[in-house]
Amino acid sequence: ACRPRAALRRRRRGARARKVSCAGRRSIGERRALGVDIGGRMAQMAAWRGDRPDTEGGPRTTRLAVAKMELARALKGLSPGVLFNLVFFSAGVSAWQDELIPMDKEVLTEALEFTNRHGAGGGTNVYGALLAAFDDPELDTLYLLSDGEPSVGEIIDTAKIHDRVVHQIGRASCRERV
Image 1 (tube, rainbow, N blue to C red):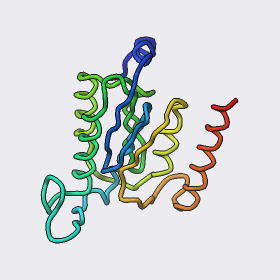
Image 2: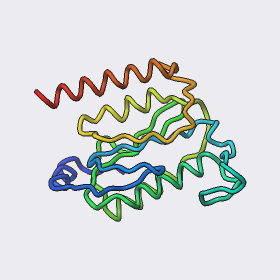
Image 3: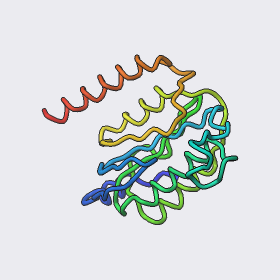
Image 4: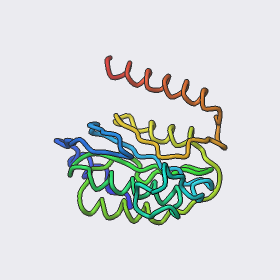
């Protein structure tokens, strides 16, 4: 459920982040998007290093279940007021909110419910997910939880996606300096 924009903007004032981890990576960004691949390959069993799994769910856990566990851990680690959004993608792309929203207990519950409603299926539109995340000009940090293999969308070549993303970041950086 989207919240009224005026109320969200009032709550954004003074939002501050603490360091939080997502999939083992530290982040100090204050305005985050978390992209989660829900393409068909995410229904496959997760591969483990060594003879025992190092995450909840054991060796019979799907890639999507692992991604959801990491996402839940990252969301629970966000400080109240930190701005964030979720972007789920398979062949299509679904942003949870129209813009970044401030974290609070109610929002955490809604975000976790939104996360749990998604199953795996379809292709993997990485480029579409990146475009959706970068559509919010306030974004400063993006995490993408994926098996890393684009299969559908405007661009599926990873080198071309990289080049477009670098170009997009460069354009955004130049706008901020003006």
